[in-house]
Image (cartoon, rainbow, N blue to C red; front, top):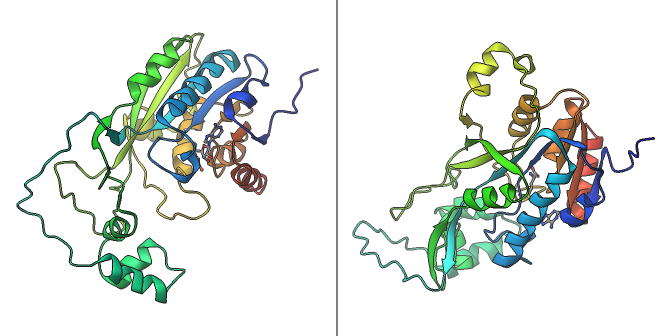
Length: 307
Ligand SMILES: C[S@@+](CC[C@H](N)C(=O)[O-])C[C@H]1O[C@@H](n2cnc3c(N)ncnc32)[C@H](O)[C@@H]1O
């Protein structure tokens, strides 16, 4: 009889180790968003080599557990501020730069009066952008800010493709998830030639085998609006509540409905708050999630069970 203990649940552990316990040819779709190597709390234990080993390892495990003809969809972004000690620091003569006159001390005073205020609240009390708050308090920001080295953009799509092809998974398609500019909830303006970041990638890898193409999975207008479209417009999650980096339910729903049918098995090896598993359950698919942090595995399990 089929062993189903591993299914319809969220496992705690390193994705590579947990996936190694799953049966061969068992996954119809894997959809995930890994750590991006951009300094989030949940990836602070990784150096660049660890990060590459993690992604390469997880991709390799897929070659065995995916069904023939199945897809693995990875949502990721390039590393926009990759610190490179060898790179000369970019010197700018920024003639349009208007320096914000708010000091770190000004912000610390407000923080003292409102100890529970988050970044957005602090920004609205002080009357500046969230970016200024972060720069003054943490000496850094999402664009790399004051790094001790020069920063460059590091593209990741080619790395994923190289690691996937090494185990027989081929890049079948890629789409753009167009969200909203980061810091859109504040007063973000680029003070350099680097654009405000407002999109991420969806890389679709294929395990060789027969693919079932079924347009009935979507309604006619949905094929026109998204099935055949390379750019998907979906607002990102603006709150920083239960998880630092949730992707929207709509993103998971589109991917799952496009690539799978009822009762298919959906994997998310970096399940975080459980968006993929929750939507899989909502759509009557089977699911399996993994997160190395117990708090997220529990959160994902509870959220999915509540569905
Ligand atoms: C970008 S978040 C995923 C967010 C998720 N898509 C959601 O909607 O909530 C990446 C997750 O991977 C987890 N993670 C990091 N390293 C891991 C590893 N080695 N194995 C499994 N999970 C890992 C982190 O704890 C984090 O929750």
